[in-house]
Length: 114
Length: 113
Image (tube, rainbow over all chains, first blue to last red):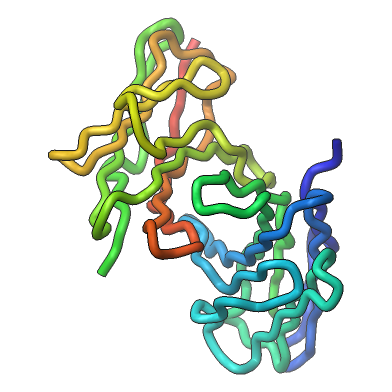
């Protein structure tokens, strides 16, 4: 079956522009996570959805970051007025739900802010 | 603060030799423990997890990990390394009361032929 799909794979934007990153989770997975991975670092949690409900957004670094999952499937991470420090790989993961279930990751979107 | 430590940035082993990638954690309670592998320009791939029970867990591609509660460690092991095992390995913990994974900084494994 298909894994987690993220698009675009690469995004280059000028500082100040808005960007939108898409995540298509594995079918049937109720839990969806966004992580930010800086160069040479491990992923860091941004936000978590259970179905369409955003249950935890404690990792979002500023109010410029916004995520949604309106129908409980596809999710979009939006970054407004991008800054150079937003440059990173953004990873999406999904799981069946339940705290002992592994999260399955997409290949990520590499965002570069010029 | 809750954290995961991978004390080695890089581990070098010869093909056919056993390998160990170390991980320790500082998390309250009894967390769930995971290992992931990342190949260049790819996402993280799940290898194995410890939830409860036997301290030695087996996972994909011949990898296993040993949980040690007293040392708060979860070291990744493989009896005989392959060149194709060369990749970036991440240890992660999920606090019982939490949802998100807390990752270490990663360890690059290099297996030479």
